[in-house]
Image (cartoon, rainbow, N blue to C red):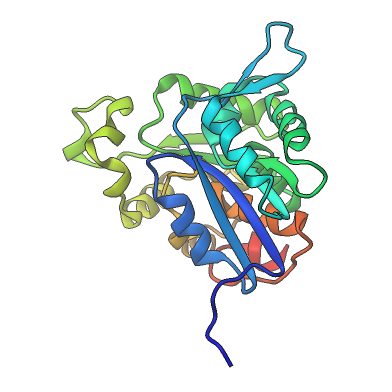
Length: 263
């Protein structure tokens, strides 16, 4: 009778994303199965989005993070994800779990809560891989790159190598921290990213993990898997997959990697 209206009667997912990014919602809407909707709350705080208390017994979310949580509490959501790789990476040991516990208290008994870091680790386990080639956005500085490698290694997924994507000559005179301010986030091209990953992935890597929810890449996941003959996981793909499973949705999704198609 009527046209499709993207009403999430099967699952409704809340996602915290960086305030000035367009990639997370675009990639999620590209991959979503029918009858599932995604709803974004934007956060402008610096990473990590929740700060440890002085006694490290828990965390306190930044104000815009907490505000989004209060709004989500009224939306009858099935799952909520902190869609920010940098917060998981920089939060320190136990940060993901502390945030899940705190937000679960704010949101009540309805939605299941997760973080992008936990989602990526769960995706690696689901695919039975432990030695990913870690690919990082060009706007990650040396500190975040090192922290990303350490984050995986400390959680049983020591990278077989890592790559900070080189976006090309026009950006090379800018330090990583200034790329987004100069438009890099909206000038991303997936073809050179595909070429760099294919050319540099080490033979000993059993998978590829592309970090960064603002890092445009889901359009090349299938092609990379076919060429490299190993699983390829991205930040947004992993969080969508885990939120669907936490919501009880197991619809196979083709075109965006083995994780969504087979697991």
